[in-house]
Length: 252
Image (tube, rainbow, N blue to C red; front, side):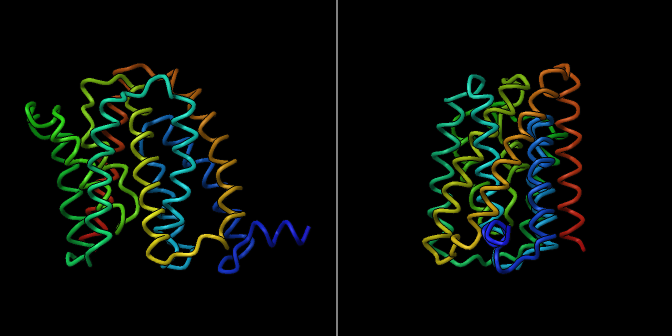
């Protein structure tokens, strides 16, 4: 029993904190699969209360890679490969850029800019020539992946750039999950090269992967039952609430 605990619990965490994160992985993965977004920010908020600051972004990225991988696998037939390609291209560029430079903008200013953009994308006028093109997808990949390196949860930014009018709810959730897998995957690789050591966290990450997969299964069952129009409304409301939360953090 002690061997199992030592494997699952990193030296930097208590047993209680590790159990909380494993349970949170189930619920946040279920939320994101059912609603399309939101689980990553909830997980980030929980991690910020129980984990060392230096470990939050890399471990959050690893957990989100795992959970989005299970979601991508379960909804793989619904992924828009063309959108995934252009967004991933931008993501590679964004990670490469911010990995080589020191961020000069303070976090609160990034949060102000990102929250404003999300609110505009949901409720502002639609710029059709921009929002549905390849250039906007590449730009979205650059912006969201670069942002993810510093504030962790970039799901709302990614969602804001996806052409929601062209995708049904299954395609939207599946394509969003696919973009997040690649984006977080590139991020954890880059952070590893920059010196973060993942090995003490492997046991906890495996446990969170399993619980996240079970959460994705539960969330998928809910997703298929939500009517199309209601899903889009819920998606936009959740996106707005997350943007307002980010705005509140920036002002605070």
